[in-house]
Length: 221
Ligand code: SF4
Image (cartoon, rainbow, N blue to C red; front, side, top):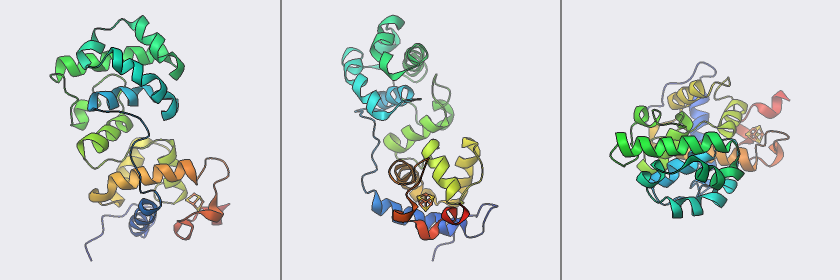
C-alpha cells in the first residue's frame, strides 16, 4: 500500500477518509467537467471571471455572443468597456466584470504572448483571477493538480471534518496535504458536485448521502 500523505492536525484518520471520499464521490459523479461552456483556455479564463457571484448557467447565456464578437485576447483587450458591460450585464457586477475581463485579456495579450499562462503565480497576477479561478483553469485545461475552493468545497470539506475553518487558502493547503496529487482535481470536482446536489448549504440530504458513513456531521446536529 503506498504511503499516505501527511494528515492534517484535526484527525489522524482524515487522510484515509479523504481518499475514501474521493473514491466514492468520483464514482457517484463520473462527469466532472466544468459546468462552464468553453472551447479554449482564453474562453475558460473569461467565463471563470464572469462566474463570480452568479451561476455557471447564467454565464453560459452570455459567453456565446461575447466570444463571437471577441474571439481572441487581442480583440477583447481593445474592446470598449461600455460594449462589454452591455454583453455581461445579466451576470451582475457588470462594470467590475467588464473591466476585469478586458484587463485579463490585455494581460494575456501583453504579458503572456496571447496565451493563458499555466503557472499559479502568473495566473493570480491577472485581473479578476483569484486562487480558486486559477485552480479551475490549471485543472481543466492544463491537467495540473487543482483544489478549487469555492463555497461548496469549503462547506462539504468542513462537514466531513477534513478541514476546520473558512479561509479558502488555508482550506486549499489543508486539502493538498490530505489528498494525493494524482486525485486532487477529481476530489475537488466531485466534492464540489456533492455540495451542489446532496450536501446542500441548508438541509443537507444526509439520509441519502453516499459518504454518510465517513462523515461526522450528522452526529453533530
Ligand atoms: S452526511 Fe450529510 S453533511 Fe455529511 S457529506 Fe453527506 S450530506 Fe454532507
